Structures are given as C-alpha cells and as structure tokens.
Image (cartoon, rainbow, N blue to C red; front, side, top):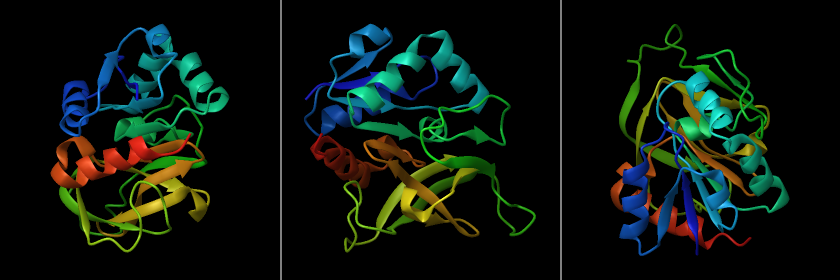
Length: 205
C-alpha cells in the first residue's frame, strides 16, 4: 500500500505521516507531484486560508495531477480539514474557486443565529448519517478533534456521511465516489483517528 501525503506547504504533514506509521502503514510525504503518480492512496491535508491553499495547489503543479489521480485512476483520496474544504466549489473565506469535486460550498459558522465561540476548537462527537467505509453506523460514539471557522454545506444529503454538532449540525465527513473529506483532524484524534485511517486504507479501489 503506497500512501502519498501531498506537501505543498499547507498541511500538518508530519503529524499525518506519524499517524499512518502508528497503524503500521508506510506513508511518504511528497512535494514533487510526479512522485505520487503510482500511489494507491492519496491524502490532502491542510491548515490555513482557503485561497492560500488553492494557490499552493496550482503553483506547485498538484492541481492537474490531483484531477488525474482522482478521476482517471480513481485513487481513494482523503482531504483533511482545509484539504476537505478545498474539495468544494468555493468558500466564504476567499475568492478563488475550489477544486469543485463535491457539490458543496464552505460557509462561516452562523454566529448570528447561535451563541458559539469561533473557531470551533476541541473534541466533538461525530455521528454517521448513512452507512459508509470511514465511520460505519452502529458503532459507539466517535470523538474527533476539530479546529475550524468554516464548514461545508452540501447540495445533497447523499454527499454527507457524518455530522457533528456545534450550535447546529454540520457535515464533518463528505464524499463523492472515491473522494472523501473530513473536517476534523484524524491525526490528532488518537484511537478514533487511527481507526478511521485504517478504514481508509481498506477501501476497495
């Protein structure tokens, strides 16, 4: 199993790599897109601003290869935090278009509707909304670590695999075919994150 972790300067790279190593999988941090062409799993981590993330994907040459791997080779791909948001069409945080792979927009938390502190930061329960490979329904409560000001709003519930609650429910795992996104940080979520990444590795291509 060859796991490639995209490094274009926007991700919490080493923490993600260490978590894969903790579950017994070899993962390579890849800064040259050509080195990821033969990968069997692809991870797009990210922290920071939406426009900076999209600019980094274009400037580093990853944009074209990501599209090829996701849609031509159908490689299972996991976007983490900002990496998940980049899978969407756009974000309130910036003006650049996202990858547009998932029919969703990234919106700021509605602090005018509910009294919540922004950013949403800390451990939170995650609940499956439909059967899925990453977080099967029927399991005991799963807790994951979140740090974010924005969240996805999907056009269809079919794209939403799980939700979390912060003032109101919001999508925290989304999917389109072989493309998955998680708003939380599995690499900071201890046994729950380890189990989720194990399940990601077990997805059938």
